[in-house]
Length: 169
Image: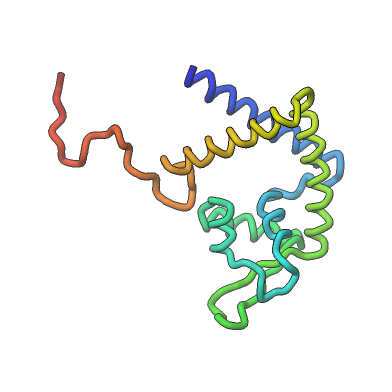
């Protein structure tokens, strides 16, 4: 069952991604390469001093800082985000979403809602809630064994300790 479950989840993720890309393309906003990052920025107030830093975004998204840096560079070039030097600590930049970014994220969210509506077609509200709870639990479980890209994976609990002599039989 384990391999079949993994394959099914991979197929589900790929189909969901493809459906989202098609829905975004129909709205003319396919160029948004990091909608999750842009969405996260949209949840912050417009006050520059309250905008998150790159590291704070990486932590929120469970992503490696270099991954977030690369995504921010593209979003900034597209005019969806802007960086401002932190007034209290000039070594840090605060990242803000622009009005153009807010417009594109609104269109993107409409696309994602449409895709989710199709994905959950025929599900009761209780089944939808249960599915979300189960996926959240699975995600937290995977974070505990290295699924969080911000940090090195923990050692395999089933592996012998370093330096242990292995039984050849």
